[in-house]
Length: 196
Image (cartoon, rainbow, N blue to C red; front, top):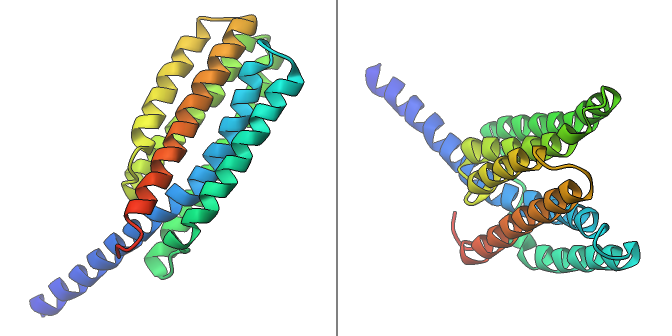
């Protein structure tokens, strides 16, 4: 009976580790796509006070097009994970992402209505950073924990700024972190394509 129990526990543990490994790849692919899209948005926002909106927008479009090209090249290396444990992980990842996106819209709106404008950008940056840290803990994804920590640090810095200086620092630092994380994740996927 004890042997059967240990065997079942071992199988559950193996299934969990396999699901985490599969999701590690998937979050680098899907998360990388989100990071490129939001990184481009942050870049446009950070460049807008420094140049024309047309130039900032063109840079953002070029970043997105580059991200789409790279994403398509590593698409096959991270298929959607299957299985009971993989589904549980997917639900947790989906709920956390939806909560972060919702908070990124509602909380800044509330802060702005209270005239605490200086906290809005920092809150959004910190919420993205905390999501990346949580995802790293959930599936042991490389780079995301570090990127999340750096983003939270930059968020704290931006609270001390205001006006266009805050917009430039928040935008460019967030873009740099998100795009670097996405690029590192894609590079990792290319070198781990044949594993599992």
